[in-house]
Image (cartoon, rainbow, N blue to C red; front, side):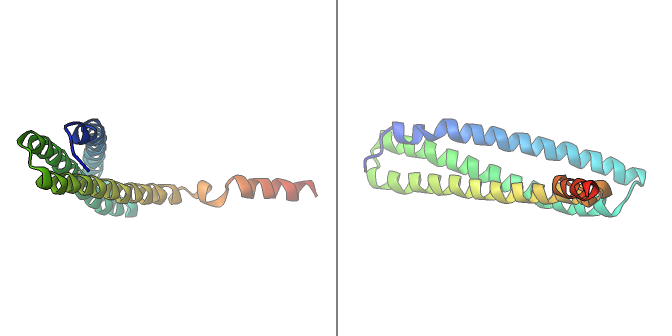
Length: 148
């Protein structure tokens, strides 16, 4: 396979959009951490607050790793384009493959971070008793029992 300028250039918009999404996740986490910090300082400590702080620490590290992998992928694309210019034919294949692998790693880490985010939301929902006790199916079942 021959790598031309167009091959790594195809990844530029994708990586740029991913980095923008990762930055937005980072900013949302930073705001949440600041809010939880204020609650902690005010003394509004509950059992969920400590769990949230623990998972936020994990999530912020995951976002940092996602961003680093994305930037590394972007850097490898730039080096590949320079390699096309310099006609480093065999080296370009390795560098471009490294770029793709880095992008893949970034996406996998993003899935892990989304999983952690979902876990935190599930803790929040489980704290609300009315959501725990009823749902669409149990409400439907109870209405069927009332008619009899």
